[in-house]
Length: 419
Image 1 (tube, rainbow, N blue to C red):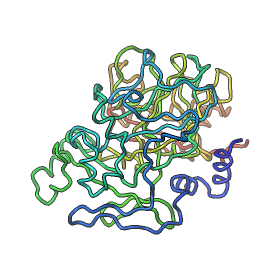
Image 2 (tube, one colour; image 1 turned 180 degrees about the horizontal axis):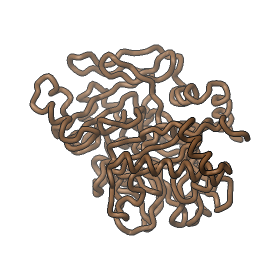
Image 3 (spheres, helix red, strand yellow; image 1 turned 90 degrees about the horizontal axis):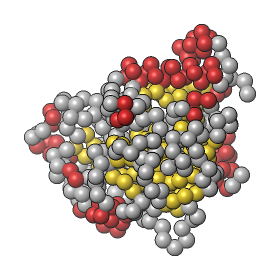
Image 4 (cartoon, rainbow, N blue to C red; image 1 turned 45 degrees about the horizontal axis):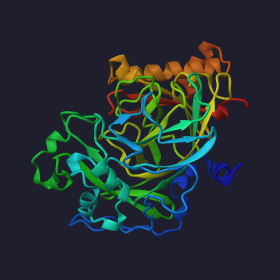
């Protein structure tokens, strides 16, 4: 067990699930004093003790994957023909820099230095790799996301499942953005349309006439928090996008999640969690992006609190019959120290299936079926008893309602079952 694993195990045992999640987000800054965010007047720099993590140069760890114009895709996901940007051994620990698309997109000027300095951020506190990607990487996919990868794993073959252990997530900047765009979100056609032309809301409209709310991150006595108006809220960073390549040559939109992962937006997949992804192509071709600092269940405005993260993950390929839930060999399946997390999607086939159904009913049914399959196939429960247990004891949470393919995930308590 390496140092990172020992740290995670100790912290989980000492703090429990929620305490562990928050500690994992801000263990390096828990003792810092809280700082106030921008006032309602002119933008001012967000004071913070959270360091800015620019790309690593000298002293980078082994298996470090930076976010460069040659190591990211913009708006689409890797497929079977995508050349890997790195190849690692089975079980390797990988450090991956991710870039938030917020501040980089065209409706914000496609110039993160200009955008964030306009919010009061010092130019030196804007990520240089974000600025370089904005200038040099073609935005040639239909989605907004900047995706780092793919990373090939030696020995991974179709029929395996790739276990992605999230060992560490560090904020790269002390700020994020929450956006709402026309025709999108939980209330398309209603918001932000109702705010168009209203002078009292003009400060939140970006250059493309979409709503982008700058959100400072602060270090407080209890951990990291975000600040929006009079409200502060705890940060629990996670990677909105984690996936493996689909077995297709067709372009895959970065927005809808599919049966090989992608934009799942499951906010329980924080530090200490594991995500299983069914391998469809040799090497698996793992990718990640859409870094979130915090997200409520549903992600209703359109985005979470989007902000760049440095992720440390362990990538392990598991052959059929190996130590993984049976369901994990055919569909994404999550796990935390305290819960199993079957994941349901309204349209798992994604673009290859000709769908992208926006339906919470379909996502809920899919999540229930996958939870039932796990309880029957892996825990040995009789189906009628498993169905009754899900009704009596399991929470089903809305992952997100904004990515065309909607998501619902179950939280099955491990403590309810004998070891």
